[in-house]
Image (cartoon, rainbow, N blue to C red; front, side):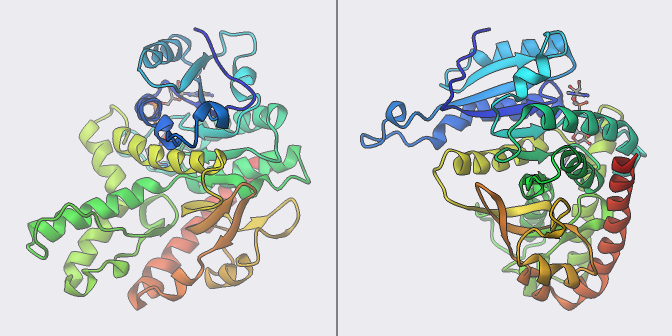
Length: 373
Ligand code: NAI
C-alpha cells in the first residue's frame, strides 16, 4: 500500500490498531481528521502544508494490513500505512518521525476480571513499546495517549521506562492516560436519568461532568455536584449515578460475556481526544484543555511538572499521578486546574477522594515496582 508521509505531515501512530478499539477508532479518525484543517479561500491546505498521516501497527500481521487497506479506500485525504512484525522494521517505521502515539494495544478484560488483573500481561507490552519509543522517537516533542489498562499503573510504568532511557527528557509532561470514556459515560448516564426520572424535559444538550481520580472502579470520581441539575438530584440518584460510572466498564464486559470490553464507546472517546491533540499539533490551537491521567511530578528533573503541582499534590495526600483537568501546549502540561479539588462537594471530598487516592497510590507503586525490575 502506498504511503504519502512527508516531513510536514502530522503523523499519528496507532499501536494495537487491529483490535476492537483500534479498528473503530481508526475508522472515526480516517473519516474525520481532515475536517480539522481549515478549508477556506484564505487558508489553502496545500500552502499550509497540513496533511495528516495515520501509521497503523499491530502484532496481528494480516489483520492490520487488512484494516489499513480497507480504510485506505475511504474518500478522505488522510493517508495511511500499515506496519507489523512481519516487516523488517515494522515498529520502527511506524514510530519514526511521529508526533502522536495512541496506544490501544493489549489484553481487554473478561467477565470477573478487574483492570488490575491485566497488569502483568499488558505491562510487558507497554514496557517493550516504551523501549522502542525511546529508541526511535524524538523525546523532545512526541505526545503519547495511553488507552491500555490498567491506566493507573501503566502511565507511571511507561513514564519511568522512557525516563530511564532519556534521563534528562521532560517526556512525562506529554504522556496522558485516556480516561475520557468515564466522562462520556457520566454525561450519558446523567442525561438518561434526567429524562427517565422526569427531572428535565427531553433535550439534545448533553451535560458536561468532570470525572477525576483514576480509571478503575472506585478510583473513578465523577463530580455530579458540577451538574446544573445537581440541586434537583436526590441522594439516591447521585449514588446510583456514581456507581454506574464506576462500574460502566463492567456493564459492557458482562454484556459481551467473554468477547472483550468496551470498544465502540471507547473508540468514540479516544477519537474525541485525538482530534483535540491533532488540532494542537497542527498548530490550529496554541493550547488545549481536558482531563487526563497525568504525572504531576517530573521524575527526571525531580521537580513538579508545573508550579500548580505544588498546590495539587498536598491536596491529594501526596499522590503524584491523577486524572485532573490540565492545560496543554506543544511542550506538554503547563497548568493544572487544581481548584476543582477545592470546589468538590463535601461528600465527594470526604468519602470519594480519600478512597480513590489510597487505591491510586497502590496502583502507582505496582507500575513503578515493575519499571524497577
Ligand atoms: P483487543 O484485544 O480487541 O485489541 C488489542 C490489540 O492489541 C490486538 O489487535 C492485539 O493484536 C494488539 N496487540 C497486542 N500486543 C501488541 C503489541 N505488543 N504491539 C502492538 N499491538 C499489540 O482489545 P481492545 O478491546 O481493543 O482493548 C485494548 C486495551 O484497551 C485493553 O487493555 C483494554 O483493557 C483497554 N481499554 C481501555 C479503556 C479506557 O478507558 N482507557 C476502555 C476500554 C478498554
